Length: 254
Ligand SMILES: *C/C=C(C)/C=C/C=C(C)/C=C/C1=C(C)CCCC1(C)C
Image (cartoon, rainbow, N blue to C red; front, top):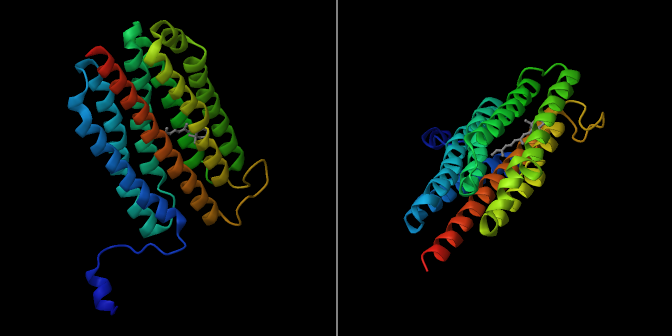
């Protein structure tokens, strides 16, 4: 192509070996497709389940929009789009907390449970942001903020696995209990992907062992891990809720 053609093509190129750029691209498409899927499925559910599936769609839709920005940002600067990443999370992770509340409403979940989960998720993300965006020149502070964020994460794990949420799920039983258990696994295993990404991106890497050769490679690796984590968690979470709504609708209308 001539230079002129490149000027006409106002589209960033993704190099063949830019795996990070590739996962941003795939991520944006996956989130968009999932959103269309959730939104267009809404009318087949009983009214009381529609809000839950709607929220699934909002989670992937908000992520899709952020992925368009992050994809372009990565292409243009080759840097971690930390700001967009955390804005995305601060909107979508609380919505995932709302999902727990919504499916447990049948067992009488109170709004206070939802606010507790939201509160800890915000603590987890804000401290993570301090570590990732504001402590660039201090690996020690990155570890400190990462640790505080990790504690908030474990409080969420505790509430859903063993605390109030677990008790409600047990009293609901049936499909709700099954869905709750799967969502718990997402939080324990799926969400644990993120601290791995954070460690990869931290200077000095894992407990002082540098896993990737330089800070650019570290940022790239971190973003690949975050991108995989986002697709697994946001789309996976949504599908669990979708399946619950589906089962509950077909059993109650027969
Ligand atoms: C859709 C986005 C989701 C589910 C994002 C979840 C993010 C986390 C669970 C992040 C957790 C972190 C830690 C536990 C410690 C290090 C800092 C974070 C923010 C990466």
